[in-house]
Image 1: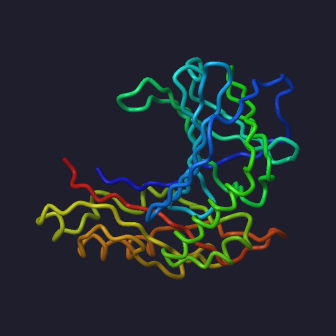
Image 2 (image 1 turned 135 degrees about the vertical axis):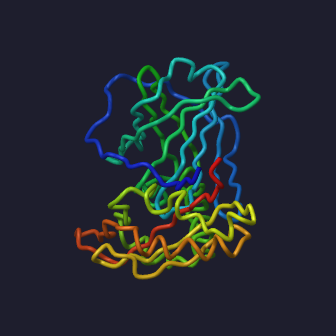
Length: 271
């Protein structure tokens, strides 16, 4: 099966629930892990005997985080659905579609979602409370030193993006990033599998970077991370140029501006 991976959309909401949430305190320092294609900021919190791991992970995208909550006890009643992430003391509150799961070979349950167009470093205060609300789960996390932690995450993210060829000054000047205007799953299909790669049984993931003009059309595409096979790498951008359509990035005034989109195609031989 051929799979294109892309980020889920987010919705802005105007308010938060009024019920008092459970207050969680840090159980240790924040940890920042930098890898070649992503950065992960993690911290554990506790209330009584319960523990909760919170993780913000940059994605192969421009202003999107994969947010994960993990706990052996606190998330047992949580179901897939809407989750709200709010920064206490500000009007920064967003609602996302979350999924649940379990940590492989462990007892912890997960609540996980993609936070799209929610660039946190300039929004987070030095000592920031984060509120997470999803059904019966309502928690407020007292994160001391959050401002510095998220500034470091932002610097790590910018370094990863720059390595991929992204002009981060352009990205950060556009609060609304470019988004697909048609279905990314149709940009590359099983019928597009390079015949030479098929014969050689070559499979792999190709990361691509496109520059998008103010009209939403792709003006440039290049391979940002190789699959290790020239046949797959060379076959990716021609498909993206031909089929991908976008809603352009927009500046603070709402005017269309040049933008970027980072994506991946997993080339896998159909069974």
